[in-house]
Image (cartoon, rainbow, N blue to C red; front, side, top):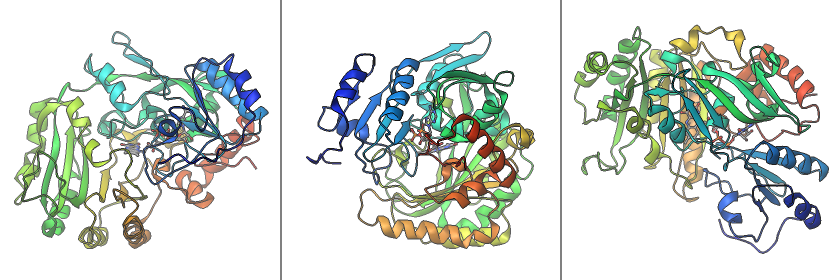
Length: 467
Ligand SMILES: Cc1cc2nc3c(=O)[nH]c(=O)nc-3n(C[C@H](O)[C@H](O)[C@H](O)COP(=O)(O)OP(=O)(O)OC[C@H]3O[C@@H](n4cnc5c(N)ncnc54)[C@H](O)[C@@H]3O)c2cc1C
């Protein structure tokens, strides 16, 4: 991103006045750090807000909301900045940036963690793993806890402990009026239901309180790869092998070109591969036993599945999704890996050209599917698998072709689509948001939106319109 001289307009006197009671930095076009703070993870998004309010705590968030309303500014809310479609930054309006809110407090006795809104997954893991504990979260350490949790939160230990929201005890929320409210099963229970899957539609969550569970610190985990030619046999074996696997085992099948990483032999780099990355959230010896069939299947070209610290395993996918590349995703859930679905996966995997394009096929089920579907706004607990089809390029060059590939892959799967995970949506319109929640939950969320945000102040999200 490069600076341009033209700046979006905003009332400078009002901003100076705001600064007198605002602890964090207020960053405007032309200020040092403006380009740094308007950047988000997806390098294909280049937007120029009129003001970035870098909040340090609840009072700053309240002030930022009241200011945006008084100035009639469009407001984007930023946690970890990993929104695929870039909804955490806007042109001309205001970014309410929660990144400076980095507090994590772990109580190993009660097994509870209190987490502020700017914390990233790796930062949370670092604190909880000091006690051999974890919150179920996602698979890339630089993702934000806030956005991920508010959409549901799927990751390596979800089949054992559920989604991130399933271990959420309470939240502190600043509403569109600037009021701070607490929500839990016993307090503002309707709001607590809504924030567990309903995203940023109802307010800014400044604090999360999670239950912790034992994980690691060592786990049996990592990827096993085969040549893409072997994909039909690998996928059929994979389907049968995981059919009745324990909740401790979570896997993600991957298709891509082998990346240029130190663990990849040079003669494999750039070749089309299919892999299964696993994590066994239980004793390492049990994990070794459970994963033996995977490691012994066919002729792997790379096997990096071994005992390792959970913290190390959590970083497995980090090098594949660095900040600043151009990212596009299409996603859907499917009920099962039928032969038809496998044929589509095989065919479209072979067509991958970009060295940074990939798919992740998530095994769902386990504890996620056993929790009462009505308990939270999250939909899709019955999904068999979730597809994350990533058409990526390092720069704008070639990005269109990657997007086309991702759309073609997704379209071919259309007859098998069931639901879609809201955090894996691009800006795809109201119909897709409705599909993500299902008709009944969508209507319930609309009612809640009318109660907590009737003017749709929080509109830059997978938006549930109050009207
Ligand atoms: C590289 C990568 C890996 C991912 N891996 C996973 C994964 O393993 N599991 C998974 O479940 N998802 C995953 N996702 C999807 C991820 O959950 C969403 O992109 C999520 O929105 C990211 O949260 P964030 O705070 O980083 O994003 P941001 O871009 O900061 O926020 C996204 C949206 O969340 C809302 N929001 C953020 N913070 C708050 C807050 N404090 N209060 C209210 N609303 C808020 C806003 O509407 C905002 O537009 C991944 C995404 C990326 C890019």
